[in-house]
Image (cartoon, rainbow, N blue to C red):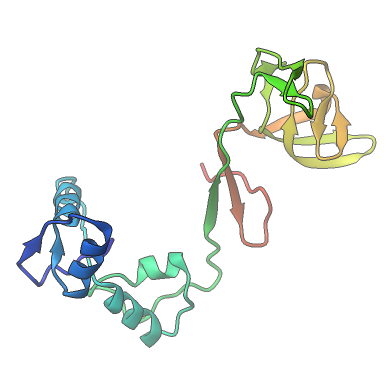
Length: 186
């Protein structure tokens, strides 16, 4: 949410369309004001600007329309040149921790197979990023555990003794443009 702090007349948001109308009239939204004031209590420099100012800053500097470059162009303190060559943003996708489904139903909806109650096996769990060096080759990716000593890594079955954990599953997938499944920066 972008806020223009130059107008002093706040309005209360009663509906989604009312919020858009208030933003069109360049009025403060009370919800945004409360958020801004709470962020200022942390003592960090916080700046707000309108979407028009962000677009102006982005186009005058000749930057592409991406979320991460837009974040660098918000507000009046945007520098005249932004060096972004060689910067690759970390893209984070929420995958979750699986489902609560306790059985696999058949085509009629009746329970067919029951899931194991344990989430881990031999110290690994589904979704962990691992690197496996075997006689078949080197494999890297997310594993799907089974409750026997061979896990699924892509289309290959791998024994845990060949695996090394790179990143434990936390419900998110981390990628960089051009790099698949990059572990997060620590």
